[in-house]
Image (cartoon, rainbow, N blue to C red; front, side):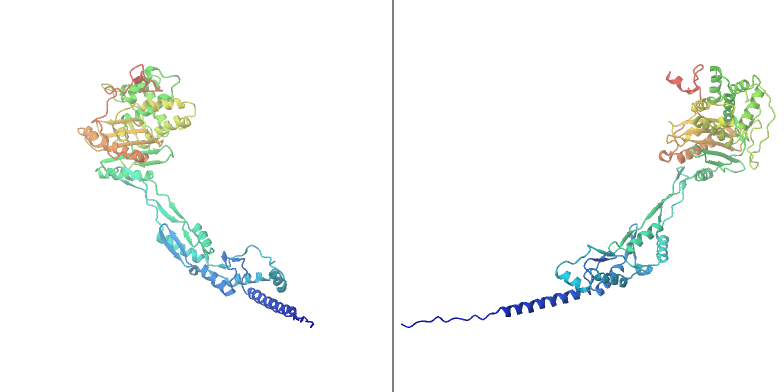
Length: 541
């Protein structure tokens, strides 16, 4: 039997070959990673932001181009709705990309030597900050930007309009609001935009300049132009107007020949009332209150004379002298009374006239016994108001305790019942309170009225108006009623409109033909019911 033998197959070992192949492959990978890492050293690290622009991973050339392109973009400025383009180069701006890119590339040296960083790279252990911010390097000429903005302001700014007036409606009104570029703020805003890579739009800061509000000078010119339009020359040879207005909120005054002397007529009875309260030593009797009501509301001459007798201790001339002294001490330096008021069938005489110095350039042929100026009467009213409201005015001028806030308030209360419905009252709304005294003469064309208007908006004011026209005795009354009264009422309306623009009287009110009579129309309290603290209490009772 033949023995079969098994052939033994010999396996050639390939381990060395495989190892060699793996070694070659690893060398190849190593070289590839080494070359890739070497190339990365010529690029900006991925975590770098320069001037707000992400330049990570870019070559130096790419980063420089990107930075220059970004910061050379124009900036759009808006003046209101108008766009204005600003080229940064026009103000000398240039981003220094070279400096920023050099700084960015220098960040590759962080983390040790090349081989340390390479092996960290292989081990995926690169130490990188989250973001590296490189500040923007660049500047411009601020004076060029300032010149650019000055040019914008010159072309686009709108000055505020001047206050003006309308003679037709007797109103004053504010000028149009202007617009002004706020250059200091605009400089800072544009500076930020120049340095920002994305926010390249600026809404320029515009300040709305305050419009010019009408002043008392505006009112003055309105009244003068109105009188001219009516054929009444305020400073003419045969016509003269004296107007005084005081803003009781600010103390400002307006004057139109307010220092010219006029016949004061019954308007002077305001001074008699003031002097009566100056020497009052006890509570007014009903008899005295009745006299005051007749004098101030009905302009009754006999009652006014009796009051001066009371003031003078039974001597009317002592009382007349006292009235003048009180006026002048209170500031009415060009006013005087030197004789009693006329009474039918009585010749009462006169006393010496004190020295005064009214405006000598105008002659209105004033009464030689009874003269005043618009400013003097207006000043007396302002003194009463300040006394009642603030404890000053008459209380300051007469520091002997002669006046109290109560006595001054009583004067205002009394005068507020003077419901004539013409003259100053005719130029204000019907329901507005006015404390006033009026006067006119039938022997010459002269009319006067002075009062305090208590505006509902709190803007109280004093207005004192004297108008004179040269005329003979026969037509004086007609000239007064038909010509001067409407003029005075429109002066009052213009003044009301100035202080109360939100409730202006554009048209004249429907007024009675003549002033209302105190007895016939019932605005004088009955005897025994004159309440100086509440002058209209008798109506409710």
